[in-house]
Image (cartoon, rainbow, N blue to C red; front, side, top):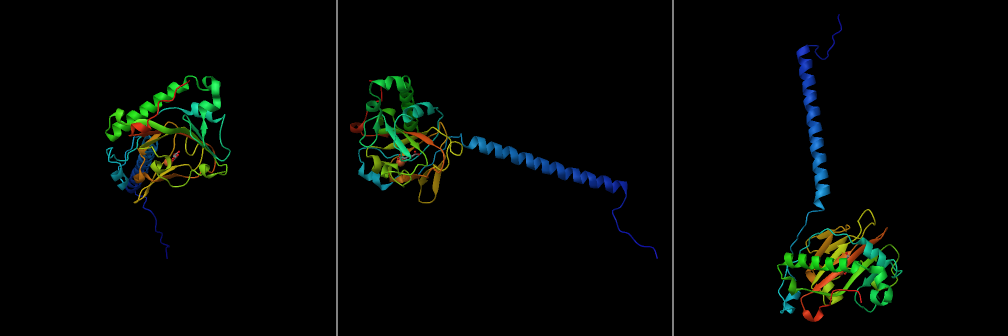
Length: 270
Ligand SMILES: O=C(O)CCC(=O)C(=O)O
Ligand SMILES: [Fe+2]
């Protein structure tokens, strides 16, 4: 009896078909892979640079502020570089409890750079005040445009400050930046808060993301050097900053009020 073998037919036509089928599958896989990679690269690199605006319902608080119109919470990004100024100022003064806030305006528990540097202020900052003023007015313009205001309806207010956060443990409650809060309650005169980030999340520090604690879900802003986030300062924008486990996070807070009584002048050299 002859042993029977089953195997792939040696027919040349079916071999050709099999190899062209394999070729098609490989091409399809390659195409899918390349498309996936390109989409991933596109979304990773472009997503972060696109201005984003989210709208939330105004909180009940605004019923108390009859004088001023009610605006929605929105935020967007603009690109600016400001790291140098923060590092220069902050390297010379600050708390050892993980957070340093340096106001350009006098505030009780924080460093007033005018007082701190006295006559040396010109050596430390020189042309940086010009840059700072320019940044403030660009942010003011962006806020006014986004919220449908005239730039003359919002005024720079205090405190406006640099902050540096690292993993050093908090020495007092002012160092505890991670608590959920409402800026209007914390700072009083704020109607619009803006934050200009000066260092990159994930590269220069870990944690430290800004979290809007919206009722439906949280929304997170990843700090990135040059990124600006702004929002109305009422209870519709309860937020907190995640703890920073490593590295150093720099930011500038620039705030605006609708009330001319709380307006301050742009910072300038004496
Ligand atoms: O630095 C930040 O991202 C926000 C800080 C903050 O919420 C505040 O100082 O009120
Ligand atoms: Fe805040």
